[in-house]
Image 1 (cartoon, helix red, strand yellow):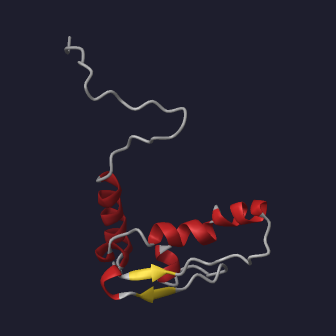
Image 2: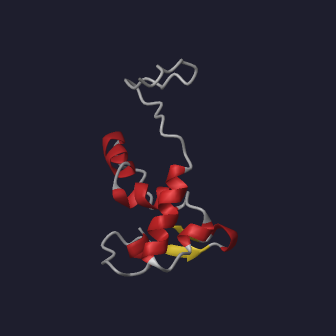
Length: 105
């Protein structure tokens, strides 16, 4: 998405960005025609054309305004590491934070 905004790659998906003031650069999330079947809507909703802008729009303005790619990558890493890595996905067990750990030998 950063490279799309900077016009460093071709924009075959026609993703548009606008400067939204305090939110920084936001990407327009495209919509599918209302006549689409549920299956097509699901496929469309899970595509990069939709998920990319949605994820981009969650970034803080200070990060999505960054012009230097190296600084953007460092900022993105710091931003992502600020969230706990404990997915509540089905089939995964949360780490027990109250369990006693074994002493080092």
